[in-house]
Image (cartoon, rainbow, N blue to C red):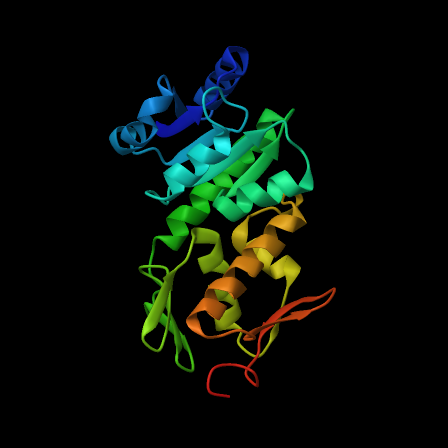
Length: 233
């Protein structure tokens, strides 16, 4: 069975989630000691983490930052905080998805399957090449790092997918729908804000490398990696 780490303090919800996931071939391990989060992730090596935000001792965002500082394991946040600002905060810190409570367990399973499927696909190098290039900008598909001249930046899984699709379609408008399909299998399960946040994070990382205006927004349509304003244009 596929191991999933569940960080949730509500015992009733623990039981509900573990029993339901078990029926779909997942083994949900419940975190017992909040002081051993990193040790538990290292020992269990879960394929995915389900993380509640309203936790005792520390806020779930603290654990999200802590885990993301060491591991790239996919993380789905489970939270009763439905405010847009909270959802954006979770995605910006590094969550792969943000699910608000109460949620339909079937939708949660669909999200888990989609994220794990994408994680498996992104771990495989492209058949033709392990590197995409756009002038001096390159993207290594093995390490998920963007490099510009002598500087490089590590990308999260979703940031990598966004930049990969834009580089493969350089000079052409990539619609928001195309990007949503690249990140997730079913756009009905996606908050549109999540895509905006991921594109913004890619822009920020490229700007830190010296590429401040290479991704242009086509309002109401999508984005384009602009050849005319790109590197060494």
